[in-house]
Length: 442
Image (cartoon, rainbow, N blue to C red; front, side, top):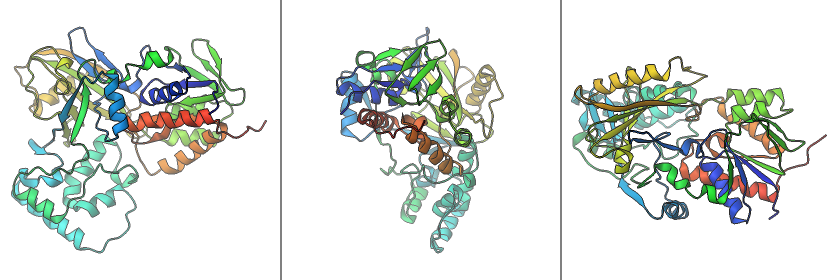
């Protein structure tokens, strides 16, 4: 492999993957990040009161033995190995996850309606589906789809299921057989069908601990926000006045932000990047004076009059994430520039979240709140709306032509988990090392 001057932009999990791959070739890369901390969306922060929160509910559930061993070595084998416990909140009920396999918690009449609908669609001739809504109805029947995944889609993906493709599904939505549906309707049971059964989490330091070797393998330059990239002159300029040259560039910058920075980028390509939709997440973090807040580590919230879409409980991942005897809650409230713009301040949302936590019974009136805070995550989840495929092909085709190696959730613009983001960074570094790019026309 040719050892080029490879510049890496972004110090999250994908940037870490790229740096690790370059380091394996004897290169200590320079990694630039706009923040005053490294880790990107993988960052973790501990408040003076002793509560630690990640930038989102990060856990490692990869089944890739290489990545498992690699991450474990980064924390000196000091990690928690936990069985996943997920539940759902729907109209005052606590339901086992996934709901389609645990209908026994619902009112009997509703269970009959769901099963009747399920049988009806599964006896009908199979036909092609054009969007996610059609897939949901064909998989579960209209009654179940309307009460659960169609509602959740509007809260989490911020658009309708009819406006979404099925490209992102993978193992995420389990399709039960009639036998499985009936068994879960009659009595509680514990099927091993969810794509997450067990996960790992560092004992200390939050999820960021998995990136502990980063400063040793790379020269990390913080507070370097990219303002322009010249693909012909092979140079990058930063907001602080620094300018650097490169032979190859690996970028995990979100595509809608990246394309306007590129000198000479065609208007249709910039417009295609603008059409790529994602969510913005306001993470509201709450520390409480008791630990028995939930039986599960994550709760999905379906009710549309409750502002948050999902709850996670960091103290249940590692006891070191909260002071002794205390518990922590992280609530996710979603917005989207394209579909539901953020029109509230984080401070307003903190109060609303705490009120809704009390409404759904997670918080008691007697609970003493020891910490409250919020983080705005500008790029949260990629929204697989019906514009994504064509727009992404245009953007990626242009980046391939000019030799910018994109990676990570927001470079690949996919629904990536931790291991996939790391591998994406490795893949981009491999491409950069081999110098796979055409000559640019003058």
